[in-house]
Length: 127
Image 1 (cartoon, rainbow, N blue to C red):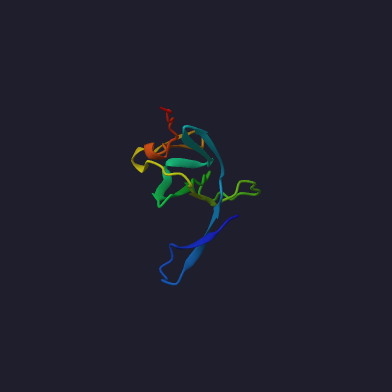
Image 2: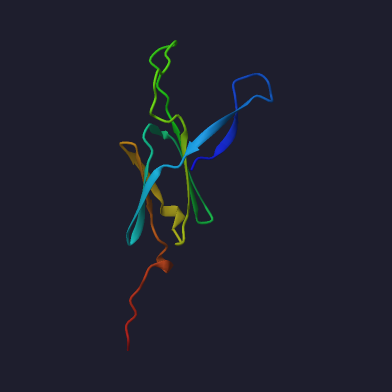
């Protein structure tokens, strides 16, 4: 479930590009009137997260921070993927985009997506 984009490398050659891999992060969606989306992106600092809402499509990207012990450091074995995160969710509910909030806690991005008032269920009394 990963896709690839091309990014310019540090080389001076204009044709030099390197593929950048993306992983789809694990996520949960909860509803209690409004919606809460939890996206699990370990290794991503809050400054490295981009969130865009466009036409009921929520796009989230997070760049992982690489850690190096020293200049000549090389991993001998690695189980942690080196890819960045990308998630696109098509929402089937109208969300009040002006009230969306986001925060991070321990590698988890938490988004609050308030449903537009016009789309919320309402009680109709019978006269």
